Length: 163
Image (cartoon, rainbow, N blue to C red; front, side, top):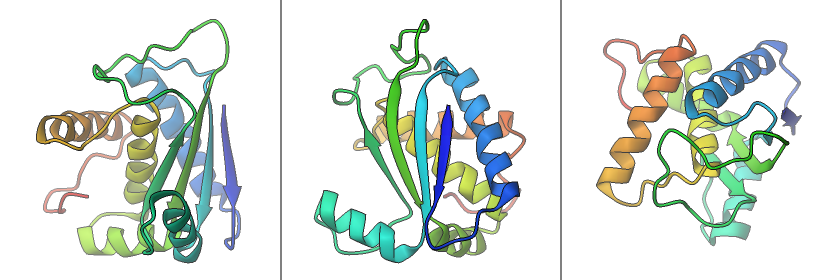
């Protein structure tokens, strides 16, 4: 189940529909049961900066933050999470800066939809235990992000820079 919270921004039906569609695809591709619970906060840079400062000690805005409610990262965070399929599990929360969505989409040469979906998928994979602290983890995570976005009908446009 996906819950979307809007802060300092008007609810946008198209963005809601996009995130719901991508949520279904990311669950399908990763093997996470559709019964998992994820909350997404869509806010501005000021809110993401406050969260970044409070939780990471970094006093700058950021594009996406993930707050997993599961214990630590999994070493084998591949395509199948170790989640019980028979009942819902709260994975955690994702916070996305709509200001960063706009700026990064423009800088990368792709749509707002692609950028919002990318940040959501990136945050979701962190909730499942993916990390990108080392090169192999980064490459594995990027490959899975691209597979999910392509499956959702949002492949990287030709000529666009990497997110």
